[in-house]
Image 1 (cartoon, one colour):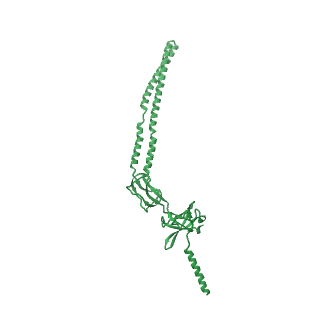
Image 2: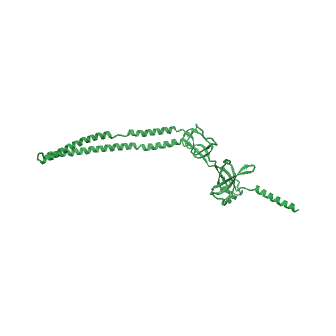
Length: 316
């Protein structure tokens, strides 16, 4: 009788343990997502090439296509031609200045002769061999010659200043044109379709030969090396989790088995929301839950939209 009772107790214990293991629930559930980037065209025009396919892995900053930018290239050449033409519009002051300088040399020579004559008359006047009127006349001529010399020098300066001002006005148009060239060069660079992030092509929206516009989506890419599980613990569980906490992430592996991953909590929502219909939480009676994000290193098994479970209990 004692032996039968002992078997009964052991059997009951095994049944209870089995039931407890079978009914163990996860602390939170959610679906996997990835940081997706939609790559768009930066120019309007015909797509000359787009070398991407869905499922293809691309590296960051790789050139994957080209948009026709012939019109922009022609605009750039036109602006560069306008810059070169500016130098042809400028004036050269050398001929006019040279003419005035020759005139100035003649006037200087005349002044030198008059000064020499003035000195001679002054000496003669001291010897009473000349009159005061002769000295006054030569002095007046010297004054006139000096004034003519000053006027000619002023004309040279004015001519140089006028030409320089005119040339500066013409050449000042060069800076805006150079800025325009820089803008067009930047647009030409944008004709190349450069992949901004490393990852896997999720969706392709366009094909070579199509006409695209600036901002129009070409393809979607996502880095699948690290996935994000968006899970929904209840408010009662919120006090047991924190940023940077390591958790266990379980993914259905078939035949009621689970594949286990290590995850890190990277984000916790600051506001509660109603429980998503597709999410089963630990406390099924709770109406409000908090969204969290858990980063999980992907070994290739995880897919976008895949369902995942979270356990916090052993990681507090």
